[in-house]
Length: 199
Image 1 (spheres, rainbow, N blue to C red):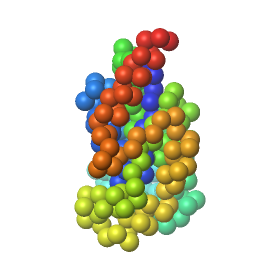
Image 2 (tube, rainbow, N blue to C red):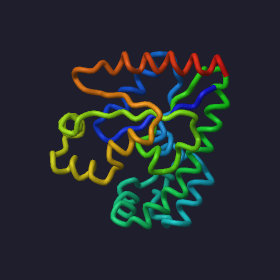
Image 3 (cartoon, helix red, strand yellow):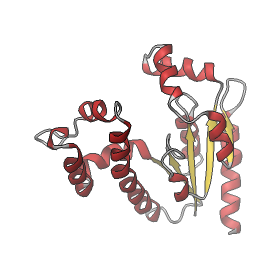
Image 4 (spheres, helix red, strand yellow):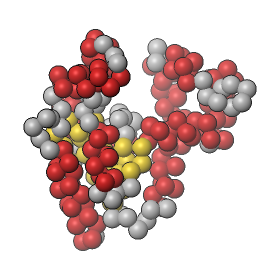
């Protein structure tokens, strides 16, 4: 089995690309949604979060107060680094178990917006960056999130530049109105399946 990490900046179409990989039959691990689940269901992670950030980040019934935690970590780089140091290893352990359950697959996809930022590329065999022109990314995100252009541009400014993503990735998917993302994904699907069968 080949493990493929798919990443991309906000509005690039990363999740759309991953839906196309899934449509090709590839199992897709959405690291963001799994992380959210683990922060409420993984007993060891919950204990570690309570110890580090205080009991107040969870409600009496054990639900994570995401707004409270976000307000604390996103205004303080040290706090954010501490959160990531607890969550990322838990997510990668979960990803490992998830992969073991899908051992018969030719390849699996790890979807992560922070693949390179968090050093998660070491857990996969191939990396794919999804890219799109800045103006299209801004317009897509404004439509999707109901955010202002200024808010979206601020969020983009703190992410790894697309040029850096493409430089570090093994493959790049270009997601513009004139390029067929589905066709590009289909070509990579064939490549990964062929690679796995030859190995």
